[in-house]
Image (tube, rainbow, N blue to C red; front, side, top):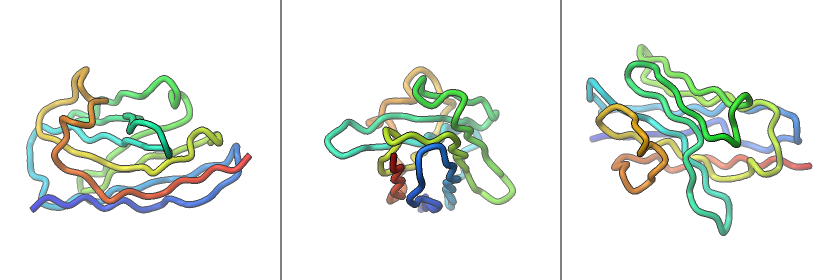
Length: 125
């Protein structure tokens, strides 16, 4: 059984930093794609950053240069370092995983079977 558990959310002022973590268990695909999505109230869930089993990364334009996705395979943990946070980064953040390498489809939430429960990030002005 695949489980994803996010942690690290919280409240921060604009310009601050947060580090989100996603612990994985039961996810044993040799090739995979893991994505951080976020969803703000009244908005669609959007892909923020992705990483695959070859450590290749992709980012949404809105977070490039501010967010960094990484993984520690020994610990089965995925991280999202978020710097220079803005109020528009306020959202529920989810990690999602799927078998297969990330492609242009990485931002499509409908293609991911495995999801965590989410962690809230709130950035105040």
